[in-house]
Image 1 (spheres, rainbow, N blue to C red):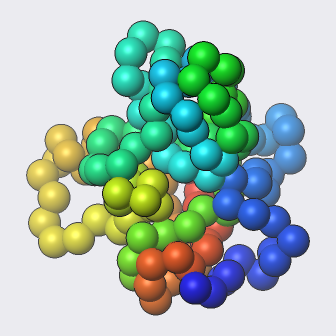
Image 2: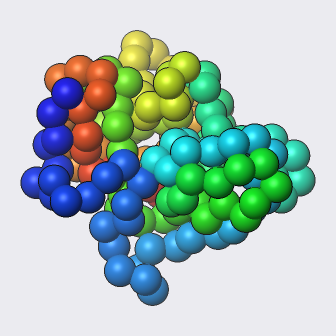
Image 3: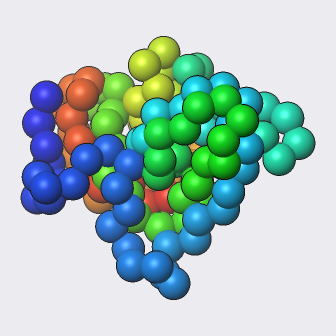
Length: 138
């Protein structure tokens, strides 16, 4: 597990961009969510943590319990943990069973790519648990 961000003082889910540059929306948590997890709309105006390849809307910036409001980064840069090797500049999506970010592998259909594309990484990672800066572009 390597921190490739150059920002060891930050943890997964910490936003890199200043307020006004980063775009954060709030949704009610339909399940417990951990800061740094990719989240998807599980009901109208409600989010849940992704634990499989899903059309995620962003990354949680706070750990919350069911029913609490969850701030979600939908545009901007954030520190994330990855679930496997990634290549800088290539598209990323959420998530593996541990809620970590993944790189697209093999051939993807246009719809899957559009629905699931969450952004791109600024560093290459070699394995699960590495930390990178992700540029979320939902």
